[in-house]
Image (cartoon, rainbow, N blue to C red; front, side):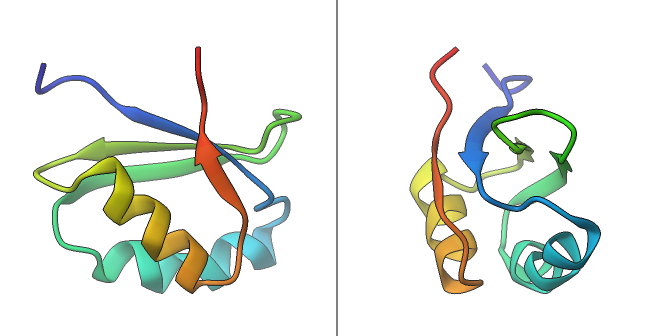
Length: 73
C-alpha cells in the first residue's frame, strides 16, 4: 500500500494559502510530495506519504491555520 496517497478536504483556496501552508508541510517528516487542487470545490490536498501518518498531516495543516478533514472517496 505504499503507493496510496492521502487525500483531504481543506479550505486552502488560493496561491497565498498554499504559500502559507507550504513550510508546514515541507517541514513535516515523511512526506514525499504534496499538492492542493484549488480548482476542486473541496480544495483537495493530496499527500504522497513516506512514513507520515494521516493524523500528522492533519496536525501540520491545522498548525498552519487551515481546516482539514479526510476526504472519503
